[in-house]
Image 1: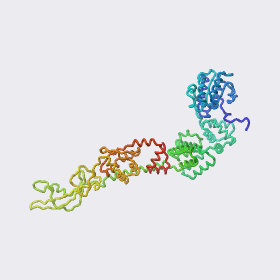
Image 2: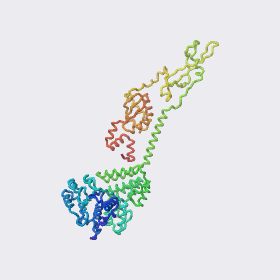
Image 3: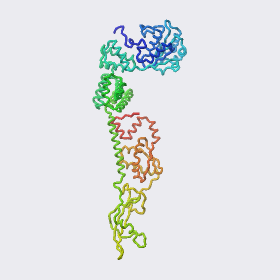
Length: 609
């Protein structure tokens, strides 16, 4: 190395406002203040590292004191008019007292005496308080410029006495433009992709970008290639990330594990890979809409690759992947076996089912649910419509069979019955079966022949005549071997007693998903025909409300009473669930619901909230 060699960060430090990158809002304000002679006595420059805070302070000091550009920015501290102090190492009250003594001395060969205090947030509270009076009422020749990366640590009494300027991070394109200009000045051959790698690695700090450029030149020489740069900076290239996403697309776990092993053998950091993968997934998400591709910080060739690869994954899949990788970044920091956790994370991405398959599964479940509901409705309908059947004999003897005597009394003719085919007779309340028998009775000469029918009626239970509409009962007809109708239930205890048989009854006719929700539900009160049921979550309430009519009919078969359901969610259960950790609740729900547990195990579902 030559004795005169200087690092790029020092060699290319801006000497005027025009050279400062991406801080035009500060530069323009200060230049206008100088032109209008409206300089403040104290400034506060805030912002991330490497964005030009100290450089801006030196340029301002050089400009207002008209110092020639031949004086290097680092040599300004040697002049009598500009005093630089590092608050990180001079943070005591005695250091501030020494600064106050220096403020009294007027400038020797200029108009202003400028005090630049770097990392001012490192001053102690006592030191800040010692500076307050001088900062509020300094001499006319004194100007204070404070620089800090953590303005929230500065006392509010200090912030209220200064003009504050917030510096912003430097964009990737602006850093690339600056590096391209420097590489031309230095005679360095470097491709566009490598410039973007350096710019993204710098994370918005131009100083860091110049330092990485210096490192790349030291490793590669005057010609910087992309692969050599990745090796020098230990950065995972986009080619590796695209290669891994191909393994995810093909569900190729073997190739994915081989790639992971190669990366670790080459010395790549796990966290660096996860950071790069997170950005890669984010870029694929954005690339689904070409009009938003300007948000992707990459070269045009890489953007084209994102356009081609993005359709391989839906946005829902990419969001799930981002969630898995983001959680892994936090968990791996505290893991005893980071490599195992790293491999598990990437295998989750490879084995994760796509959202299209999940949508098909949910659609199939909905179809099963609809089919089950239709079967229940069909089961409640009668196999055939009831018909009013009357034999011709009944029609011909509608009045005569009850007028057997000449005195007008209504007495049926008591004749031995003859077996005939039974016919169903629809009555207002019950379905009655008529066992009809015919017999011819002949009277004296000259009297007409009267055909009569003796009819026996018996009561038919609902099991024998399904779903036949009834209205008013006919009393007095009931066979001895038929069961009497069930008494109406009037209290909640009887409902609770019949509830286990109801749970057994629904297993044959309702989907298992609905069965599980009903099993978590308990009857709590009965008011008239309104039966109040209490469940433990909103999903159960929704499903029970949707199937309330079918469930009520099924309960009627067990109790003989048709209820109207009023489903409520237990407030106590809601409070207990909200008090528990979301992950604990998610595990508990899995234990209660075997279908959900199978979905989690099969598709690698993750809790998102």
